[in-house]
Amino acid sequence: MTERIKGIIDRFEGNFVVVEFNGGLNDFPRDIFPKEATSGDVVEITSKNVKVLKGETEILRKEIEDLMNDVWED
Image 1 (tube, one colour):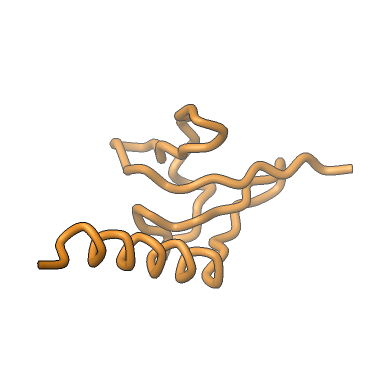
Image 2: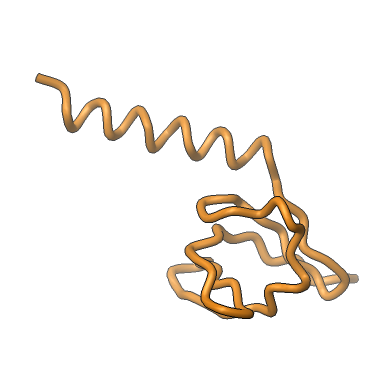
């Protein structure tokens, strides 16, 4: 069975992508990520590929937007 790691892209640094998962940060080679991947995307990493989870990314962005609106509400 292939191990799956789910995380969030924190940032891009040169030839690496820094991904946050389980409270930590790990670097992965940039060339294994889809070209469309951006900071904040939720990704699933296996030994064979990296997939951007668009639905989960949208849910996360909406949650963050709602939290920011609550904080900045007058």
